[in-house]
Image 1 (cartoon, rainbow, N blue to C red):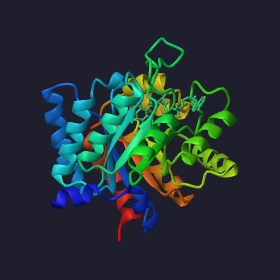
Image 2 (image 1 turned 60 degrees about the vertical axis):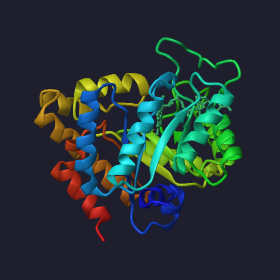
Image 3 (image 1 turned 90 degrees about the vertical axis):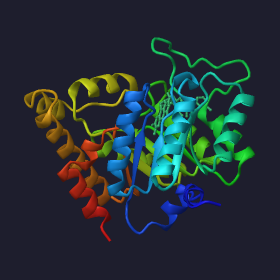
Image 4 (image 1 turned 180 degrees about the vertical axis):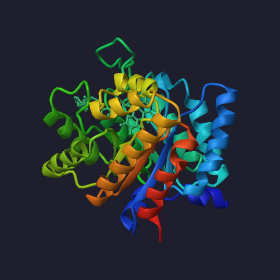
Length: 304
Ligand SMILES: Cc1cc2nc3c(=O)[nH]c(=O)nc-3n(C[C@H](O)[C@H](O)[C@H](O)COP(=O)(O)OP(=O)(O)OC[C@H]3O[C@@H](n4cnc5c(N)ncnc54)[C@H](O)[C@@H]3O)c2cc1C
């Protein structure tokens, strides 16, 4: 086995269980064209200096980005990152196709996977299940567990409740089902106020969810970008932060600094409260994570 294969074989849950310091992870998305890919490659190389404990790569709607998503996973592994976790959704695929994809991921040496339902297309209320396909992330967790019992499975959790959920309580109960079906850890949807996460963790523990829950944070460095993302994920964007970004011009260096300082405060609060680590939605930008205030904060928490 080559060195790079050995690295990918580490299960994220084992790193979480053995951790002596908070974990750091980054999420990338597969770019659409060569230019985007080249920019991502440069960012990936720059970000290595921060030594994240693992990295993940999103999977596009309808599986259209499947090949690109796996290409980014392979690139991350080639550059020397630790465990690389491909995301996988149920969108547009039958059970048999999903089994093939999972086997492919496993065959390439990846031992971690993020199991998701995927989003409903914009404008559609109900999730479009394909004939012979899966309706919920829990079904995908079961499918992966049955095929490759040694894989580490991550699932998504929603501190402010999933937008389509019947109720906050039912949303947590369904999350419990995902964990009982074999999910090893939860990564949270982005949020901007620490109390959402703390309350979410408390509610999870109350129903018996014991696994690690990693908070997902998005540094809000551009108002335009944030507004686009907020419309999709349904999280609350605090008026106070909006005002700060507006006063700094909405984007550019001033706004970036405000967004980064907000994230630094969130990281301090979350890690002080005992969160197992931080997952950064860095949107393929090295500059954000390498900003001195953020890099210093991460170093402070993770330094030996
Ligand atoms: C960390 C993270 C990473 C993500 N990565 C991607 C990505 O790479 N690609 C992508 O397309 N999207 C991604 N998403 C978005 C995600 O696909 C959407 O939020 C999607 O709408 C829900 O996915 P889920 O896995 O949480 O679904 P589910 O767990 O299936 O939940 C979806 C809804 O159904 C309800 N529900 C769950 N189980 C049941 C059940 N058994 N019976 C009835 N109702 C149920 C829940 O309450 C919820 O309202 C990500 C989200 C997060 C938080």
